Image 1 (cartoon, rainbow, N blue to C red):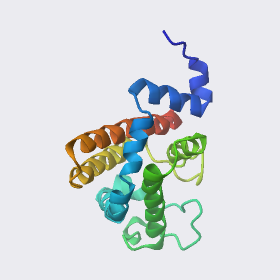
Image 2: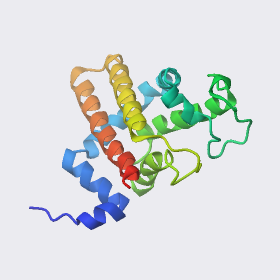
Image 3: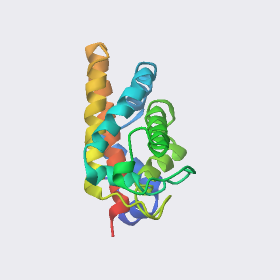
Image 4: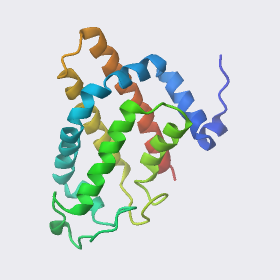
Amino acid sequence: MTHVDEVRLESDTYYRFEYVANFIGFGPDDIAAIHGTAPLLAPVVPALVDAVYDKLFQQDATWRHFLPRQSGYAGDVPLALDQLTMDHPQIAFRKQHLGRYLAALVTKPYDGKMVEYLDMVGKMHTPKAGSKELDVPLVQMNALLGFVADALTATILGLGLPRETEVKTLRAFGKLLWVENDLITRHYQR
């Protein structure tokens, strides 16, 4: 039986990442499978990003979170939801962030720096980082991550990979997104 320092799980992000990753079996073979898809997924990242934003645009409960000034965005901010169009510069700015996130998943080493980045994804959607006005409810984050998971699955299934590679890749992304989900939800503990 392995001893788990439960207090440290709450204070040491990398320790937490390692615990969850080891628990669900996310390891070097999964990372290799994810990195192996980089040349195939890179060309479809813009379409994935567009699909995510098309979905976000369909609900006022998700779209309203793009009204406040996003951290790092210096342009004009719309004053009302009906002014926030898909072609607004702030949306283009946010789309770039999502594109970089997806690219990082398939290219970056899963080291301490990457774990900090994955953890920041959750934190930046709360007032704990970035914009103090930004407070995306957990239900919206869960819905979004579920949509991203399904979009990635559909994309991977459409790549025409050999069956063994396809299965490894799907399982690897599934595990990764569960780890990411833990790093997101930890910032919602009150």
